[in-house]
Image 1 (cartoon, rainbow, N blue to C red):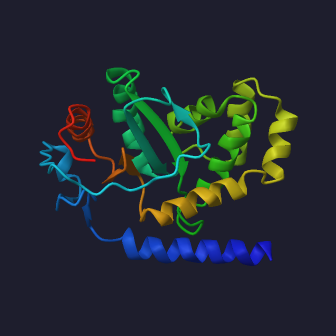
Image 2 (image 1 turned 90 degrees about the vertical axis):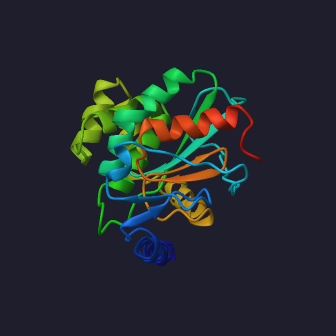
Image 3 (image 1 turned 120 degrees about the vertical axis):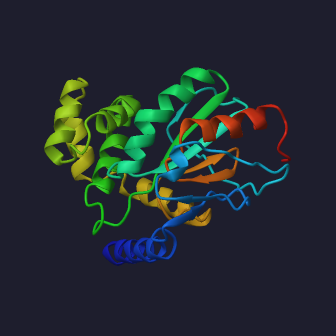
Length: 232
């Protein structure tokens, strides 16, 4: 039964990916009609944010988070460790946001591994990060994955765990037991529920932003939200 459930989940993921992730033009999902063609938006983004936009109710649950729980801005990212655009956003935007908006942002990370036929290491990497989290090293492991571009394999996860001083027996048992497989799959189901079809996808206080948008896009939305210029 579990095998059948996994196959159905994978099929559902593949179907949704084909439906939502393949078009070249992505709407940013704020109900704005923003459009991006390839990488053109990175040059000089101009975000015309209306006073009222759609806000999704995105569950945070017990997902890994950085920043105070009562921060005025919550950013939820649905991401994939094997996604090059997720890597790009991690490198160019995340650290700067957390620094510039210290104590004003709560950053929540939720897994959305693309199907194994597309990204075979995305699910194993996500499970390994949660296994590291059992020993209080989720974010250190998360950073190790994104800091070592495209080094995704069982051997790499072992190396990161060793470098972080984790109990390797406990870590390896967690991985071999697939202890967090259901957690990752639950994240995928949450992604489906809020119409996520590609990575990375973000929700800024419930407002959807699709793609590895540059810092300026996030800055404009966050500043307007903090100033109360966007209706809730």
